Image (cartoon, rainbow, N blue to C red; front, side):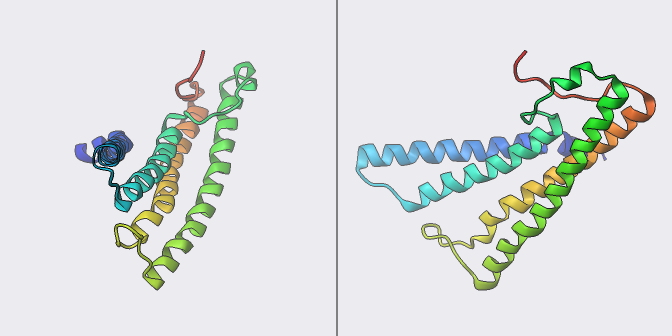
Amino acid sequence: MEMLRRIDRNAERWLLLTFYVMLVVTMAVEVLRREVFSYSSIWGEEIVRYSFIYLAWIGAAAAVRERAHIRIDVVMHYLGPRPKALLHIFGDLVMLFVAVIAVYWSYEAVHISAKFGSVTDGLRISKVWFLMAVPLGFALMIWRLMQSLRRDVQALRTGKPVYEGDTLFD
Protein backbone atom coordinates (compact mmCIF):
# COMPACT_ATOMS: atom_id res chain seq x y z
CA MET A 1 0.00 0.00 0.00
CA GLU A 2 2.79 2.41 0.88
CA MET A 3 4.51 1.56 -2.40
CA LEU A 4 1.37 2.49 -4.37
CA ARG A 5 1.19 5.81 -2.52
CA ARG A 6 4.80 6.56 -3.40
CA ILE A 7 4.17 5.72 -7.05
CA ASP A 8 1.05 7.88 -7.08
CA ARG A 9 2.95 10.76 -5.50
CA ASN A 10 6.06 10.56 -7.71
CA ALA A 11 5.20 8.68 -10.92
CA GLU A 12 5.26 11.70 -13.20
CA ARG A 13 8.44 13.06 -11.63
CA TRP A 14 10.40 9.88 -12.25
CA LEU A 15 9.02 9.43 -15.76
CA LEU A 16 9.76 13.04 -16.63
CA LEU A 17 13.27 12.74 -15.23
CA THR A 18 13.91 9.54 -17.20
CA PHE A 19 12.75 10.97 -20.52
CA TYR A 20 14.50 14.28 -19.92
CA VAL A 21 17.83 12.60 -19.17
CA MET A 22 17.40 10.34 -22.20
CA LEU A 23 16.71 13.40 -24.37
CA VAL A 24 19.65 15.45 -23.07
CA VAL A 25 22.20 12.61 -23.17
CA THR A 26 21.19 11.52 -26.65
CA MET A 27 21.24 15.09 -27.94
CA ALA A 28 24.68 15.71 -26.41
CA VAL A 29 26.06 12.51 -27.95
CA GLU A 30 24.61 13.40 -31.35
CA VAL A 31 26.05 16.94 -31.25
CA LEU A 32 29.44 15.52 -30.29
CA ARG A 33 29.28 12.94 -33.07
CA ARG A 34 28.24 15.53 -35.62
CA GLU A 35 30.81 18.18 -34.67
CA VAL A 36 33.80 15.98 -33.80
CA PHE A 37 33.34 12.98 -36.07
CA SER A 38 31.25 14.58 -38.85
CA TYR A 39 28.78 11.74 -38.51
CA SER A 40 25.26 11.60 -37.15
CA SER A 41 22.69 8.88 -36.84
CA ILE A 42 19.01 8.78 -37.60
CA TRP A 43 18.26 6.87 -34.39
CA GLY A 44 19.52 9.70 -32.18
CA GLU A 45 17.13 12.16 -33.75
CA GLU A 46 14.28 9.67 -33.27
CA ILE A 47 15.07 9.08 -29.61
CA VAL A 48 15.13 12.83 -28.96
CA ARG A 49 11.85 13.37 -30.83
CA TYR A 50 9.98 10.56 -29.10
CA SER A 51 11.41 11.42 -25.68
CA PHE A 52 10.13 14.95 -26.18
CA ILE A 53 6.68 13.65 -27.09
CA TYR A 54 6.54 11.53 -23.93
CA LEU A 55 7.80 14.51 -21.91
CA ALA A 56 4.97 16.67 -23.22
CA TRP A 57 2.17 14.21 -22.42
CA ILE A 58 3.47 13.11 -19.04
CA GLY A 59 4.12 16.76 -18.20
CA ALA A 60 0.52 17.59 -19.10
CA ALA A 61 -0.70 14.94 -16.66
CA ALA A 62 1.64 16.30 -13.97
CA ALA A 63 0.26 19.78 -14.59
CA VAL A 64 -3.30 18.47 -14.13
CA ARG A 65 -2.27 16.95 -10.80
CA GLU A 66 -0.79 20.21 -9.54
CA ARG A 67 -3.34 22.49 -11.25
CA ALA A 68 -0.43 24.12 -13.03
CA HIS A 69 -2.01 24.48 -16.47
CA ILE A 70 -2.27 28.00 -17.80
CA ARG A 71 -5.64 29.44 -16.88
CA ILE A 72 -7.37 32.76 -16.51
CA ASP A 73 -8.35 32.96 -12.86
CA VAL A 74 -9.10 36.64 -12.32
CA VAL A 75 -12.73 35.86 -11.41
CA MET A 76 -11.67 33.14 -8.97
CA HIS A 77 -10.17 35.70 -6.59
CA TYR A 78 -13.59 37.26 -6.04
CA LEU A 79 -15.48 34.04 -5.34
CA GLY A 80 -16.12 32.26 -2.07
CA PRO A 81 -15.04 28.67 -1.38
CA ARG A 82 -18.24 26.99 -2.65
CA PRO A 83 -18.54 28.77 -6.04
CA LYS A 84 -14.80 28.36 -6.52
CA ALA A 85 -15.08 24.62 -5.87
CA LEU A 86 -18.03 24.40 -8.29
CA LEU A 87 -16.03 26.16 -11.01
CA HIS A 88 -13.08 23.85 -10.49
CA ILE A 89 -15.38 20.82 -10.62
CA PHE A 90 -16.96 22.12 -13.83
CA GLY A 91 -13.50 22.67 -15.37
CA ASP A 92 -12.37 19.19 -14.35
CA LEU A 93 -15.51 17.64 -15.83
CA VAL A 94 -15.00 19.44 -19.14
CA MET A 95 -11.36 18.36 -19.21
CA LEU A 96 -12.38 14.81 -18.30
CA PHE A 97 -14.80 14.75 -21.22
CA VAL A 98 -12.10 15.97 -23.61
CA ALA A 99 -9.56 13.49 -22.22
CA VAL A 100 -11.90 10.52 -22.64
CA ILE A 101 -12.56 11.49 -26.27
CA ALA A 102 -8.82 12.00 -26.84
CA VAL A 103 -7.98 8.55 -25.44
CA TYR A 104 -10.55 6.98 -27.72
CA TRP A 105 -9.37 8.75 -30.88
CA SER A 106 -5.65 8.55 -30.15
CA TYR A 107 -5.88 4.84 -29.53
CA GLU A 108 -7.20 4.47 -33.08
CA ALA A 109 -3.79 5.50 -34.46
CA VAL A 110 -2.09 2.98 -32.16
CA HIS A 111 -4.46 0.25 -33.30
CA ILE A 112 -3.86 0.97 -37.00
CA SER A 113 -0.09 1.07 -36.48
CA ALA A 114 -0.18 -2.28 -34.68
CA LYS A 115 -2.44 -3.76 -37.34
CA PHE A 116 -0.13 -2.85 -40.22
CA GLY A 117 3.14 -3.32 -38.31
CA SER A 118 4.65 0.11 -39.00
CA VAL A 119 8.17 0.66 -37.71
CA THR A 120 10.36 3.73 -37.22
CA ASP A 121 12.88 4.61 -39.92
CA GLY A 122 16.01 4.66 -37.77
CA LEU A 123 15.36 2.41 -34.80
CA ARG A 124 13.31 -0.12 -36.80
CA ILE A 125 11.03 -0.80 -33.83
CA SER A 126 7.28 -0.70 -33.74
CA LYS A 127 5.75 2.77 -33.85
CA VAL A 128 3.16 1.55 -31.36
CA TRP A 129 5.61 2.28 -28.52
CA PHE A 130 5.81 5.91 -29.55
CA LEU A 131 2.20 6.42 -30.60
CA MET A 132 1.12 5.16 -27.17
CA ALA A 133 2.45 8.40 -25.65
CA VAL A 134 -0.80 10.22 -26.44
CA PRO A 135 -3.34 7.72 -25.06
CA LEU A 136 -1.10 7.00 -22.06
CA GLY A 137 -0.74 10.71 -21.36
CA PHE A 138 -4.48 11.26 -21.57
CA ALA A 139 -5.17 8.15 -19.47
CA LEU A 140 -2.83 9.50 -16.81
CA MET A 141 -4.66 12.84 -17.08
CA ILE A 142 -7.97 11.04 -16.54
CA TRP A 143 -6.56 9.42 -13.41
CA ARG A 144 -5.34 12.78 -12.10
CA LEU A 145 -8.65 14.45 -12.99
CA MET A 146 -10.57 11.80 -11.05
CA GLN A 147 -8.34 12.49 -8.05
CA SER A 148 -8.88 16.22 -8.49
CA LEU A 149 -12.64 15.79 -8.72
CA ARG A 150 -12.67 13.73 -5.54
CA ARG A 151 -10.60 16.39 -3.76
CA ASP A 152 -12.86 19.20 -5.05
CA VAL A 153 -16.11 17.45 -4.13
CA GLN A 154 -14.74 16.84 -0.64
CA ALA A 155 -13.82 20.54 -0.36
CA LEU A 156 -17.31 21.48 -1.55
CA ARG A 157 -18.95 19.24 1.07
CA THR A 158 -16.81 20.46 3.95
CA GLY A 159 -16.70 24.10 2.87
CA LYS A 160 -12.91 24.14 2.97
CA PRO A 161 -10.96 26.12 0.37
CA VAL A 162 -10.40 24.17 -2.83
CA TYR A 163 -6.84 23.24 -3.83
CA GLU A 164 -5.78 25.81 -6.39
CA GLY A 165 -2.30 24.55 -7.16
CA ASP A 166 0.83 26.58 -7.38
CA THR A 167 0.93 29.90 -9.18
CA LEU A 168 3.55 30.45 -11.83
CA PHE A 169 3.79 34.20 -11.34
CA ASP A 170 2.67 36.41 -8.47
